[in-house]
Amino acid sequence: MMLGLKLPTDPRWVNIAEKNIEEILTDHAFCEQKAASTAISLIVSFPEYPELIEAMIALVKEEMSHFKMVHDRILARGWKLGRDRKDEYVIKLVQFFPKGGSRTTQLVHRLLYAALIEARSCERFKLLSENIEDQELATFYRNLMKSEANHYTMFLGFARQYGNREEVDEKWQALLDYEAKIMKDLGTKETMHG
Ligand SMILES: [Fe+2]
Ligand SMILES: [Fe+2]
View 1 (cartoon, helix red, strand yellow):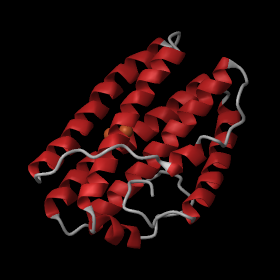
View 2 (spheres, helix red, strand yellow):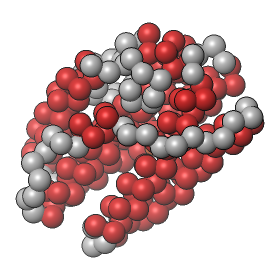
View 3 (cartoon, rainbow, N blue to C red):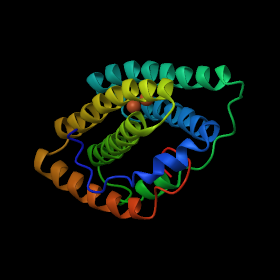
View 4 (tube, rainbow, N blue to C red):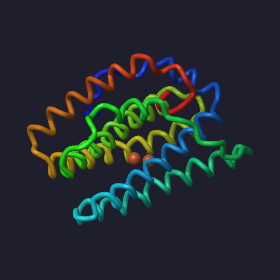
């Protein structure tokens, strides 16, 4: 996978996640919901980019279908969706770029954040698909992994298309370095990015 991530997740995270499937599924469901919400908020903030709007419409549908898939699995196991919790990883991540700047700059920053969250989610899904004992979930995560990899490529592609290519690539590398630092303290909780 060409995700560019600078620090792989500690594989022991899967064992932590596996011990509390109910918790991980609830957290995962809300990751999908947040991905859909992000797509909607990009539509609201940047209506003047037709290609982006078209892609975000498709993405909202896809992420909500992922949300349903996770929700169905929660119900099938006799559970109910729990409450949403804070995603410390995302809270820290989105503090990287300074606030303000031109509309294009703001758009590029939001696209890069989205690309990175997709990339890390993809890496986590891959780890689950390869290491989780529950075979039904292993297959489930293998399929989702492919979708999230496409989303990562799409967001990074839009950032490069709308911003200055060189500047965007520099920012992307800097964000990857910063994300690796955040990840050093993570990998210990039964949440998707914990
Ligand atoms: Fe998704
Ligand atoms: Fe996604």
